Length: 304
Figure (cartoon, one colour):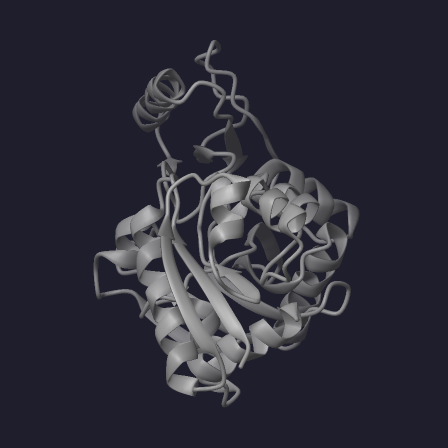
């Protein structure tokens, strides 16, 4: 029987989400009965420590720069075992929000203007409203929507303080685009990622922040929402185009804003989306008749 090493945890800000996601993946694979499941919680690991862990295939369910953004993928590739998720280069490019927006624009996918945040300059480079967030974090960690100068000043100060605590962390500022929040899950091999049904996110507070994702239960998720003619096909095509441009594989989730004019605008892409009770790729897969057990098994087979 093929054994699967499921990894959870990691050293990044999304560790708790990773623990929940990885436990869900391990449970789903064990329930299916097709694989022997080995579950390990890690922080930062060495090549030797990783090599000593059992498993024919590795399923690293980590979120954040170390576990999702390249360093862990480097180790997995050096170890030689097949693993679920993107390779190191694609993982790094997708984790870089500015870089992924450049790749999207190069692929003809509309995206809002953005730039690196210079914390030594207190003047906003764009007209308000804007969004300020770390360039290489997920789960809306450190996200600020600035619609006034007071909000901009608070976000700028938070970025400055964050840089003091985490030297080297880059921040970005992006033009705020209002509209409907849409997300598209993707599964498949590199170069042939296929879009799952579109999911609309309707947070009660108006901002899909960390609390709306994981702490509150008032966010609505609508699978296959009612969209203007042609938008469903267009946003799926855009998501697949970004995945091809970045070279991601196995699974991903691309986020968009649908403007009042009906234009999908790319926000970012995640190469290891969540597997929690509110996570969106499992919801979209379920709409196609693929439950969590089937989804996780399919991802293991893609890695093999």
